Amino acid sequence: MSEEEKIERPQTADDGPPEENIPEDISAPRSEINTEPLNDSTDTMEVHKHPHHVTHKKKWGEYVIEFLMLFLAVFLGFLAENLREHQVEKEREKQYIESLIADLKSDQDVLAKHIIHVTAGLSMMDSMINILNTPSEIAENTGRLYFFARLAPRLNPLTTNNRTFEQLKNSGNFRLIRNINISNKIMAYYEKFPLIQLLESINETEFTEYKKAASKVFVPAVFLKMEGKNDEIRRTSENPPLRSTDNESLQELSAFAVYMHGTKKGVLGNDEAIKIAGAELIEYLQKEYHLE
Image (cartoon, rainbow, N blue to C red; front, side, top):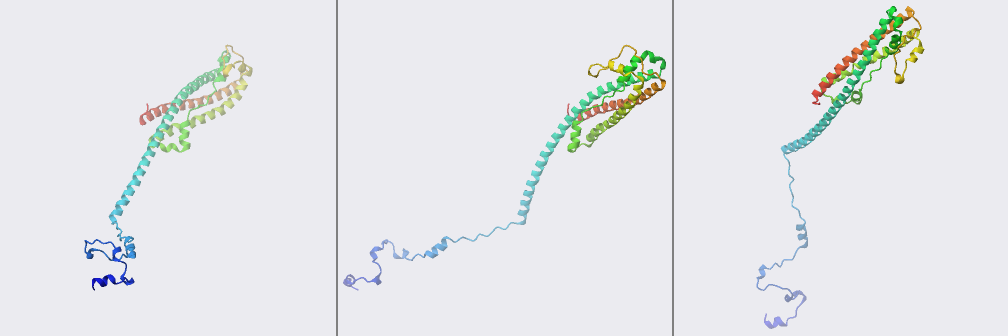
């Protein structure tokens, strides 16, 4: 085709858009220019395509290690909690023992005073029984008889401090004392007191009968004159007459005085035994728990 034909030929629709609207690098060969049309659907699929990851399958040894680590963590937590609880209970045990020692020391003072009281009562009861059983001495010693008859039968109840022991027993905290020997010694000490309470009950029964016998021998008005302030009994310097000097009445009074004397001796013996046991228990507990 000649140059004239190229110029004169009109452009048709089949020829496509004019090439002058398409920029191209005239310096580059046409073979290097990508003239392929873009495939939108293909590109979209390639962008959203994810590679297939194969899940790692654990070996049985790894499961064992994980189990052991979990078990060890739980076990160590249990040990730590158990140790903390043990320390708390050990501290509570020490506090209870300190409180118990304070009670025992209080008992030592109470027992010492009670022993003096019972011993004085026994001494007066001895003198009273001797006079009643010696008719020739009665007339000259009626003042002493009135005094002894009023004071000798008295027996103050032994009131000790068992607050800590009762708290340990009733609250179930006796379990805090892990040493069975310590627990047994504490129990043995407090098991001595019921016998004294029994003897005190017997003394009350005997005292009731004693007062019936004494009412036959002594004049009540004389007893009233002997009373002072704060329940004090004053000894008269005179020898006031007795209501009755009948030997039968005197022997009946003497018999009940003997009964009460025997009961008081039982109380005194137990007082002394408990006091010794208490002192030994204090020393033992202080040594075991390193207390001063």
